[in-house]
Amino acid sequence: MEKELLYPLTNKFRFDQKLDGLWDFKFDEGKIGQQEKWTLGLPEAMQMPVPASFNDFFTDKDSREYTGDFWYAKRFFVPESLKGQMLGLRFGAATHRVVVYVNGQEIRQHEGGFLPFTADISVAVKFGAENLVVLKLNNELHRDALPAGDTGVLKNGKKIAKPFFDFYNYSGLNRSVHLIALPQRRITDYTVTTALTGTAAEVNYTVTTNQPTATIVVALRDERGVEVATAQGEHGQMKVAQPQLWQVRDAYLYTIDIQLMDDSSQMIDEYQDQIGLRTIKIKGHQILINDQPVYLKGFGRHEDSIYAGRAFDLNVEKRDFELMKWMGANSFRTSHYPYDEEVYRFADREGFLIIDEVPAVGFKMAAASFLGGLDQSFFDGNWTQALYKKHLDQITDMIHRDKNHPSVLAWSLLNEPDTSSQSAVPYFEKLFKDTKSLDPDQRPRTFTLNEDDTFDTSYCKEFPDFYLLNRYPGWYHKWGYEISDGEANLREELNKWQASAIDKPIVFSEYGADTQPGLHKLPSVMWSEEYQIELLQMFNRVFDSYDFIRGEQPWNLADFQTVEGNMRVNGNKKGIFTRDRQPKEAAFYLRKRWLAIHNDFKN
Image (cartoon, rainbow, N blue to C red; front, side):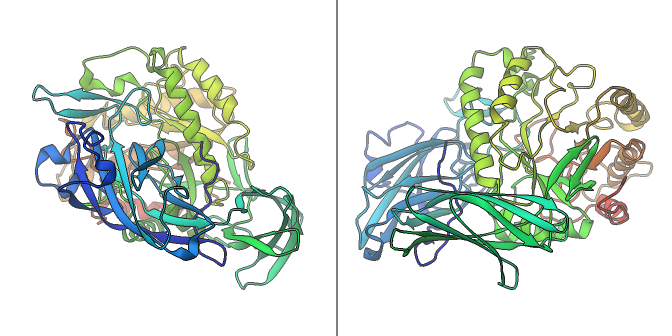
């Protein structure tokens, strides 16, 4: 578990420099790097961009599909002026596990390819001189890791990823690497929550430091820079009269300024961030923002783009937000892992709601169809005890990292786990118990239920605060001319939800049809653009028939890469946009619907 996850910044007390660019890179298929002292530098290395996934730069398949150990290295200069501070290398992500060396000295290890961590390099660096960081990474998949899968070996000795999930196992340094310098006596974390009282907002805060005797001063400023509230102490409350609330698609951000003072009232550290004042509640089958109902319109997404794979790209992210705004969307799910921190900052500014998902994907043996019909429950496996520790650790870090973002609506703790067996219940009971107090804002917690986990078959319906349903009638079953039966079956299930004593919101978090852009057929056939629209129309008829359905997030914003398979034509083509972010015909249909639906639809 990471203790300090504040986003890096540069000010009078803190230093932040990105080490992005070209790094040395080398595969280690024979696992000889340690023995041959690659920790001191990579011999005959190639150049690799950071941030980027390494896979799609190559033109040979062995390199693109490489599974195993691989190394990165870069030289960096540490100014003499940073002496006396805590020096760290902060990695936005390293897929999926990494060992960090600086100047030949092992600093730390980390597992989990979608969340940041910091390596304290203070004892290893040379000040006023050049230093060397070397990373040993490994991208193999295991059943006791997140995301879940297996690693196979071909007859020629090459390892191959066998994911239990339907997205490509892009690997490498997918996010920025920061050289940071922090005061020895410093602010290590902060938390804010909001309560609305009449015409005022109460901002409750907690500040954590590694200097318990220091004085903490907190100020809140509006977008004009005017100070609207102040407080003192490690925890307290600031009252804002006539606040500008953070609203869905109408964001307003305040700046929180936290100052740390020593015994002589001299400032020794300062941290600033932007926050939004808003509340989140689930009341019956309504999702409430600032006590007003909201209807979610948006997408499941992937961090996926041409060439750079899963790497964060500010240009792609800007384009994606502009497309979502053009569509009339107001939300998205970070399927199936926490995204780069810049994504949340985008969403904070643009007023989008995020369902924040941990990479607990592949927890279903049926998803591993290529393994030859394994029909046991995933939670019957002997790997679940080791898996649980990693699962809880990554949920903890996700909530720790993202808890202050006004855009974060809910936490999704798993995607499509196997809940149709009673063996899942103890795992879920423990997971929901152990995560209950992690979020000071007490946002709702949820997970997605897939096709096999229905109202009748799921043993874990009691746990989520609201439901995410992934349903694919018209595509994976009852397809083509049988789509009318798919609609009838979907209504049969929803009628059971409606007739039950359950009164919680349902959001459809996945539905859709693979569509080859430019393929037209009259009458429609599967894979045609006409069929994609007909399937969306069918789902929309269903959504509009039930008041407890409180959101629609089709799969996916854009086409994305997957492993090879006879159900895929160069990736998953369920995007409303192509992989290079151009609209399919369905985009225009869905845009017309969403622009006509207000955020408080079904109020």
